[in-house]
Image (cartoon, rainbow, N blue to C red):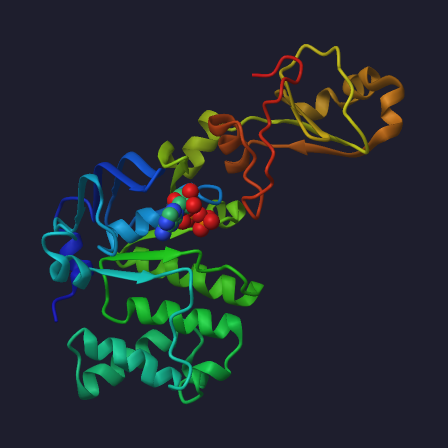
Length: 330
Ligand SMILES: Nc1ncnc2c1ncn2[C@@H]1O[C@H](COP(=O)(O)OP(=O)(O)OP(=O)(O)O)[C@@H](O)[C@H]1O
C-alpha cells in the first residue's frame, strides 16, 4: 500500500472545497463553503449545534452528495472517484462505530484488512496504532466491555489504521476524561507532524487553542472565519468584562460597546482590568444583583462572538442571541 501521507506532500491541498452547498429539504446545512486544508495542517472545525460540521465531513467522506460545488480529497472527487477518495481519508464519526462482540484487535484488524493489509503486515499495523492510543493492554478485550473513553480511542484507531492523508475527526473528545483527551490530542499532533491533514470538530475551544493549528468557524452553513488560531485571536479577539446579574441587567452609562445577553452584560474594552472600578461605580444599586464579574481576554471564544454575534458555549446550545438591543450594541 502506498503511504498516502507522503503522497499528500506532493504539492496541492489535502482537502479542497469550492462553493459547496447542501440542503436537507427546506434546511440549508451548507451554503457556498470554500475551504482548503494543507498537508500536515490541523484544522479545528468550529460551530454551534446545527452549524453544518457533520454535514461538511459527510460530504468530504463521500457519504453525502453536495447539491453544488466541488470537493477534492488529495485531488480526488469523492462523488466521481469514491474508492480513490475514500482510500486517502479516515473518518471517525461522532457516533461510536466499534463492533461490541469483537475484541479491540479484531476491530482494528478488520479495518486494516479492508485497507488491503494481510497477515504480519496487518498485525504490525494494529500494534502500531494501538500504542499511541493506549490500547496495547486492551487489544484482547471485547470492545463492548470497554469504557466509553476506551471505545472512543478504538473508534479513532479504526479511522487511521490505513494511514490516511486526511483524517476527519467529528468530536473525538466528546465525553472522554482528561487522560484520554490528552492522548487523542497528542496523537493528532504526531500525525500532523508526519504530514497528515486533520480536520477536527469540537465544542471545546480551549482544546483548539492548545492544538494551536488553524480554525474554520461555521455559522448557519457558511465559513465566517478562517485562519491561524493565534493570528485570528490577535486580529479579531476582543477583550472585555462580563457581568452576570441575578435579575435583568441594568442600563449602564459607559463609553464602551455593551451587548445584553439574558442576565449577562458583555462590555468590549481594551485592558479591562484598568476599568473594573469605573464599571462597578456605574452599576450603582444594581451592584447588589451582580452575581459574577469575569475579565475576558482575547480568545477563540471572543472571536466567535464577534463574527457571529453568538456565544460559543461548551455545549453550543445556550440559545441566547447576544444582540437583543442592549445599549450601544454592536
Ligand atoms: N438528515 C438530516 N435531515 C434533515 N436535516 C438535517 C439532517 N442532518 C442534519 N440536518 C440539519 O442540517 C443542519 C446542519 O446539521 P449538522 O449535523 O451538519 O450540524 P453540526 O454542526 O454537525 O451540529 P452538531 O454540533 O450538533 O453535531 C442542522 O440544521 C440540522 O438540523
